[in-house]
Length: 139
Image 1: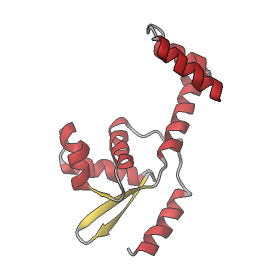
Image 2: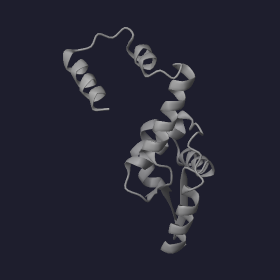
Image 3: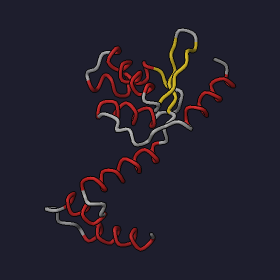
Image 4: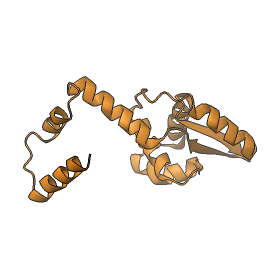
């Protein structure tokens, strides 16, 4: 694929992303690593970044990458013998959509209920409270 073909395919796929699809935990770790990297990334880079630490073999990582591509979150193309991966899904959009769905489903749509469930037994430092109040006032 040449650069124009890659760009056109990227634009087409980006318009089709379903951000409501939940990414399984292991695939999410791969997706976070891809988002963290400077695209495009290859399997060797991702093995060094996450695969070796997780104890995965290359075929396991390739399987996760393939599933992410099937779900529309990544696209790949060949560059010689190497397969390169580009994130299509926007990290902030995915995390916002997923978090909003979580809050709606498990916390009755309430930000306060979410905070209460996360920090029910935690004692806050004054700095944390001040930072939260500052953040809330800025909204």
